[in-house]
Length: 178
Figure 1 (cartoon, rainbow, N blue to C red):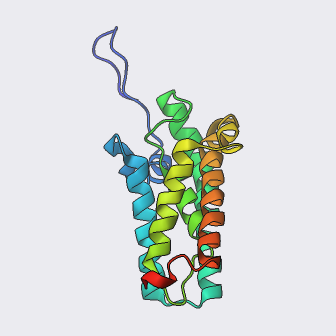
Figure 2: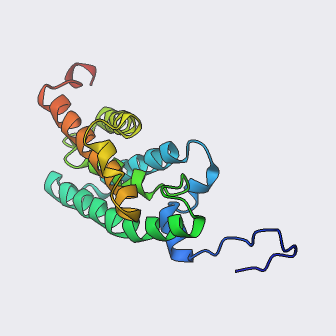
């Protein structure tokens, strides 16, 4: 940690590099307002590109997405805890790995045969709406301690969005727009 030159001046924040890299999703969280939305868009775009270029079977893409979501959560909890502690905030806006995890969860089981960008956009919009409005019990999940609380409200929002995307697929919501 750097020393302050003036006794009344606060010293700079000590940073744990891996936690900041993961927690801010490679710096996206440092952009200020809208970082969570940008991180969600980035996650959806990365997922879509992976689905398109890897051309995995529906089952393999499902497993790939499930594993990616689990990894984001498992890395996000300790990273969010560390960044929050280093900033002295309960849920700092710089931590956006939670939005990445929630967005990936919203994409689990997204229709891929054929790959349909409309469901990706729907998952993004629905996830952001559930993340912003936090219907019960999503808001209550924020009360969990440290990085767990940072992550779990977005996991809950992602699950709500996942359910809605599956319902949209079930009723063939975008079939007439193909």
